[in-house]
Image 1 (cartoon, rainbow, N blue to C red):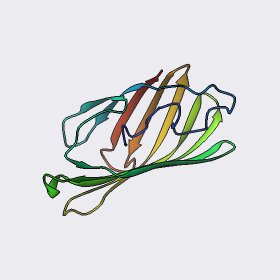
Image 2: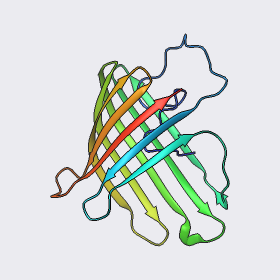
Image 3: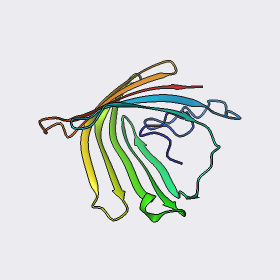
Image 4: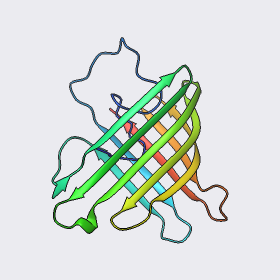
Amino acid sequence: MLTTPLSKDPQTSFGPPAPAAAPEKAWSFSASAYTYVLPDDPNYVQPTIAAVFGNTAGIAPGYKGSLGWGMLDLSSETEYVIDTGSSADSFLYTWSELGLTPVEWCRFGLVVQRTKVYKTEFDIQRGVFLGVSYKRVDVTAYVFNPDASRPIIVVGVGVSF
């Protein structure tokens, strides 16, 4: 299940994995809000609360994976939503990051998101990001298409419990 561009579920978050000695939780909960500043459309905020429940008229196979080596990490998640009510509502979405974490509270790197809506070309946006963490709060800023005259800016704030 793809919940947000950068989900901060402590069990599956991007970035370095939790220490092996951390106790396993019976459940997890996270909340985040991503503010999108778009050049040609109205700005909006996407709030997300992650938990396992919902109702959909279709299926949504996907994957979430990450690799880490020292300060370097690569993470990606993809979801293909197959709407059984209308194929025009089906889509493919991928969010990938290549990050560097020089200190525990700071992470930066490259990001790409790809979207393919039914009967359209792929929409690919590349960018950079910088994230900081303090206790259970994460704030990450993304700049997509930084070389464009009007880049897309996304600011995410997440809290994990």
